[in-house]
Image (tube, rainbow, N blue to C red):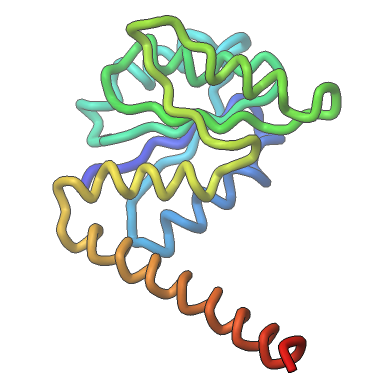
Length: 164
């Protein structure tokens, strides 16, 4: 199975990125995690992106806050799918990162999840990789079924308590 590359613009993004790591772990998806800044380490970010396909990656997650140029910088240097996670900052509550991540020019796509939406970023990676891996596709179906059961159990408890 191809690996997921996880790149964050700053180590301070780790609490958000950890949710993607945990989700990938739960599905048995291999990954690598790196800190590369679009602004402070542009050469390293570009090198990682240019070589990602040859290094066994199938999709890349790029998490960054504030100006959030990392996902676009990564996408500009690879044809692998790139999923941007805009991270919440203290200044504009992550709206700045969301807009920077989602407003890519035509020809350089970046899939974008919600602000701090690392779990969905990992699940989208899994869906992409599952296109060529039936075992992973089955794990995703099982996860959806388990999630639905959990909601229905909570519903039953609420109904039992309040619907008399």
